[in-house]
Length: 360
Image (cartoon, rainbow, N blue to C red; front, side, top):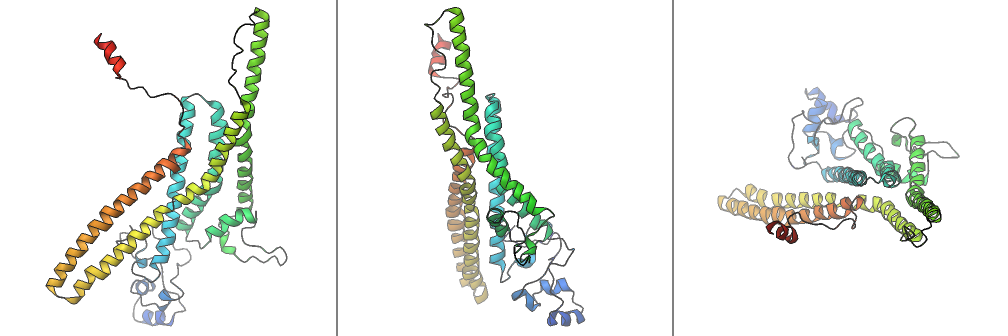
């Protein structure tokens, strides 16, 4: 995807600007805009950059072949990998919250569904779910919007998408407006996030406390009518303060975790960057150096060193590193959305007691 240029869907969709004089000369030589871009004969390719014609769709699948071996390849692929890491992280965290819903449904805990699952899903989708949609929309439309600016000023300057000056009314970043009504929609998302925090924090403890008080009143009336004052008072282990503190901790962990967990998925981008740069160094300095010298002995030694370095570093060491990072993402960022270290103790079906009972 990133290392091997594939032209299954044709060549690049980027073209040279019409203002480029060398491009005009190429045109007179029966060379098209796209051919000039592919052959790197356009000076703008290394200065201002190529352009995506208005109305032209981005490359359908994979990386546009024109970026391979370009001077701006590292910067472009870095941005792409960073956004892909965020999208992957949001998808996995969303799956983790859905797993919590399945747990609550299995335990018939309707209160937790409405007081934990629903606000958590709304909070995540209002922030990074929205960012993921903008990322996919930018890829599919060829927009040049600054998504980081949109996300940050979504909270710092609510409703102001195009950087509109309150005095001069001038919009300095019109490219950030990706759809009509974006400012109002982002304001709605911020309000949803603000509402979700007290929703997760206080609603469940309040309802549990009301239920406990109702049970106590019912038990009191039952004891008075049946003259059974010596019975146990019922749910005496209920501690509203403990439940409230637990819910506060759980809410703070989730709200802060949404940000920190999403940032943690950027390790995928860092691993991909390290892998690509090591691959480039091994390929250019070891393998291609032997090829350029033209000596068969040096070429054989270069291929052997390159093969060993590729296997030892890129496959063994980086494979182990990627496995450990992926394991951490599953254990911390994914499982903390639904895993609770309580419940029922695990009892194997064929335990020693069951085996003795069967044999007897």
